[in-house]
Length: 117
Image (tube, rainbow, N blue to C red; front, side, top):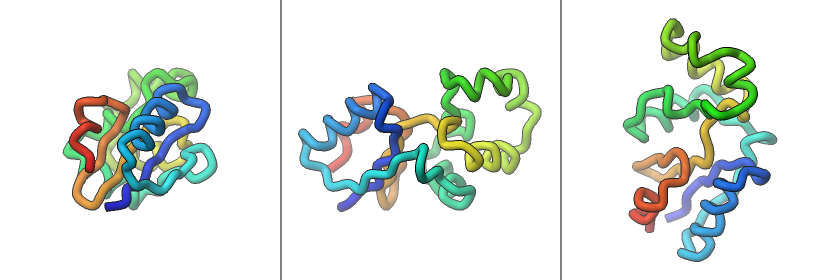
């Protein structure tokens, strides 16, 4: 099975995840989130497959998140508005993301990624 691996190459956590995938010889297609941001349809599909709330897809430690004061604004936004916001700038999206046929993993948590074949 081939996965889609979405990351930001300058991110240390993304680098760890990439190294992990390479060491486990997991087949993936690499996608730089800064150059090729996920679109609304992709995000909606991934959120659904992940089983996670949309908030988990936000890079809460990122500069843009803080500049836009999203900590206080997200709770007043609809899910569509949140997806629209994520689709505007890849740096708002939590990474890395690993997309498979029936699952989506957000952030590199080795225990979760260890279940990937």
